[in-house]
Figure (cartoon, helix red, strand yellow):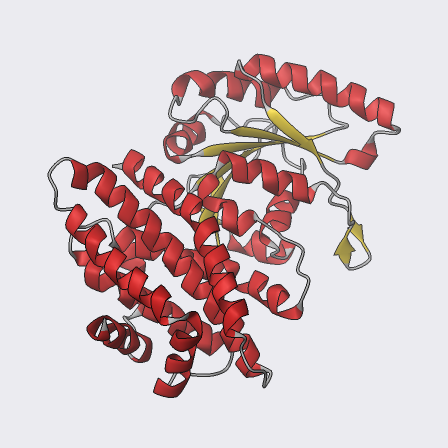
Length: 380
């Protein structure tokens, strides 16, 4: 136990280089969300709502991935999701065939963006009809229709009638039922309208891509500390996924996971304008409780041994290790954010509150970790 604690502390004060972590993280492919829709349908607004990034940042963040399409990784520094956009749909003299052939093989989910008041969607429908046959790896239910411009059609009855007509054509082209939501991302002053459909969009997308569930989950913050954590969710997720990726190799994860977690703690401290020393780290570990650390250390070692068992280790053992490494890293990050926030504001961290946050985060992280492990298995 003492040796494990010393290794973790060494990782906090001397974490691995960023480029090392990026190489490990590359073992897990980014979830790719393919946005299909005509020019002007509102795809940029959808990305803005999901990421919280400004329209300007999104516009500048797209990089070419084919001759006419672009990819946007979010966040830029530690990406956890990739959006791709087939540009020019519906424009004269644009044939999307080459783009579709190249982009279809690497996508995990489809976001079909349709402006509610635009009945001419033949180019989108034709693409969907062809894609369903060509890319069976995109599951029949891995598609979500987002109807924008809710207020462009007058009256609830008119909106329902229009959406029903558009939805019937969409499902006929796809050949299966398609989940959908109706949104209005028009600006109100400097912010979005409160009831704009964004919460439903996030919930539906999290259902399509469970590995993004923790990132997409926009719980209402009931305190400044929780609000602050919302800002760091994507970064904590990135490190958790990196820990899972490093734990895919038998024995290697025994040393690599604490190193990744140390880098996470180091990075979070920097976000809060501080550094870890032996006193603060001991206080943090003590507040979590020795039983938490002991269970983690013993369980981590047992999972590494389990991966060496022929047959079991290659399937169940590795998947379990990746799942738990994701969940434990997420939970450590959540607890650390609480601890560092309290210190930053001159408050004494409440050990009971911090342990409760850790337990809750560990529970919610297990499902997301399992989704990360499952995605890695399918990509092999």
